[in-house]
Length: 455
Image (cartoon, rainbow, N blue to C red; front, side, top):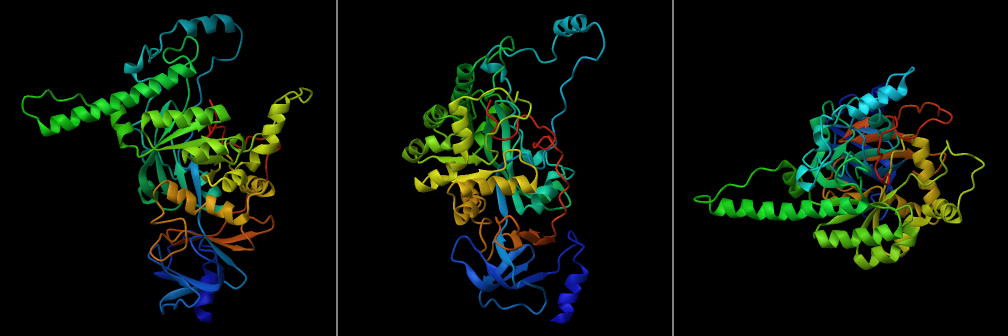
């Protein structure tokens, strides 16, 4: 036994080294989430899966042993709406510095665009519905390590550019190549209410965008029926033209719709019903005002942990309105209000990239009435259920993926230390977090838009 513990200690610095065939975490407090806590028990991991868990789980002879005395084992956290793993979009082209700016602006305005403004829905403006996050993942994204060190083992990551931005992918934050990270390649279509604005072509307004989305789903329904008819009667029937935009829409099992205000929640609930699509409403900084609507519709919400706050670049002497101040004060109470009303929801990072800020955001919700158990569930089992992944992650049960967080202390306590993170059975140790840059951005390099930003 001592020899095994020593071997483990010697390998402590090799967080990304290949794990042994079996690992046993013994004498630890275990929080399965799907069942009652185990005051003192053992979790056995083998080949990237949870082999057994319980107070009397038998440790295999070939297992490396981690002594869990004084430690707590949780399921790995899941970021329910993220861009982790997807590289930043290229920066916009700006005119060169110097004199003659007005003349250069006139020249640029007169230069024809490579993509002319859309004239109608047939031009598919701001649509990349066929694009999958699975095809965009890059191991070089530093946020993979940052989020893993915060206890996140899975991210539901999405492209976020455009009206139909593309299909999200559930990824585990481990692996030597992107394909190893993918858990489920198509979990939903990320939809925004982006519009082209004045002079930018169709759609040029919120109502135009809603009209366009409606038309896409009407086209998709017709396209699907035409394909089915052709498959049943190919002889003598003109074949339908392939449309990758509609293929991407049809492939998506659910859509994500933005909702900031109560009126948005009401509008998006009605819109999803009209489209006959399973929908997740994301953002909801005013969700505390909308619990009754969500409950009545049996709707599911994704709550942005990036709580509203005064922008750093705002004039400090400028006074905010009462409504704005109320939203900043009450937004963190949204999760607790939704629990009270029986509304299913999950939490997501919303562009927060620092571990300390993620913890502060969760703590802010807890200070506003959310219990630690409900916070944990909203970051583990509930997002797994929402995306149809609860059969493989979200709780500590035999047969599920070996995604675990091992901490010294309760997970959301300010002084708690995360000792180990297991992703697909691979053991990692948290890396030190660099000091915060005063006044620096908290959006992972200024991504535009971050998940849940309201257009």
